[in-house]
Image 1: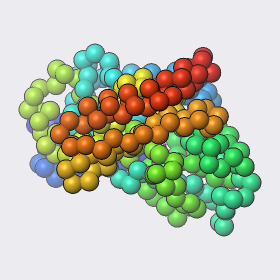
Image 2: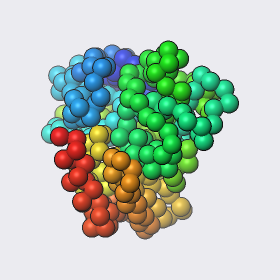
Image 3: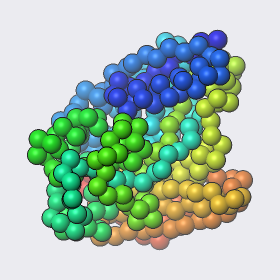
Length: 306
Ligand SMILES: NCc1[nH]cc(CCC(=O)O)c1CC(=O)O
């Protein structure tokens, strides 16, 4: 059996594809990595929230899954919409890394109390920073990690706000100047984990081999809860919705919410229950968040992003 793995061409995406490929090879399975360029990779000058988040990084990859050119696609879990297009599913989640965000800079001795310019295009990060660090200015910086670092060094900003997972995978840990705490700057749903997508039509034996080799059960339970929450919030990646689940023995603790674009209003809730039905926990959290002011914030954000 040979598994053909589709991936975007960024260094981070390739790292993730090779990570999955190595695991499959260690399990005795032959692999091949196929790089696919997506619309999201081509459009670098426009913020993702403006080109529309739906599938800009996935559409071309899904075409290859349907045509059978590739068997599976490797993605960052947090880049995946909560509802996949008809005919596709996620069959495995890789073990999650530390999920927090970090500030990265080429300048030593930066202090978050200083008047820094922070590079980020994420509405969630911008809103959280407006809330907790109102003295800081944010500027949009797009592109893959290497491009963003180059733009920072050229003077676009003092520091970048990024997921630790990507920074770690790319080996830029020595540039981390501050770790943000997950209880304060709550990560995006799925942050730090890898998701494997396939077409429903992929032969069952291949699906099983991939799932058995790659899936990390504890991570999967957490991500099912988080993604069920995201689904109810109708959160595309441009909506500052956040959520992170953790296992505490047999209990699943899911904290999540929504923050207004200007950072002024935050709704943050927690549901902790038996891990047996993670999707129910996600749905329950969504109901609490929506009923307790989240619905109003969500409506306002959709108006503002139009
Ligand atoms: N939105 C881009 C993206 N998708 C996944 C990661 C990092 C890796 C991960 O969270 O798994 C990043 C970069 C970032 O947010 O800093």
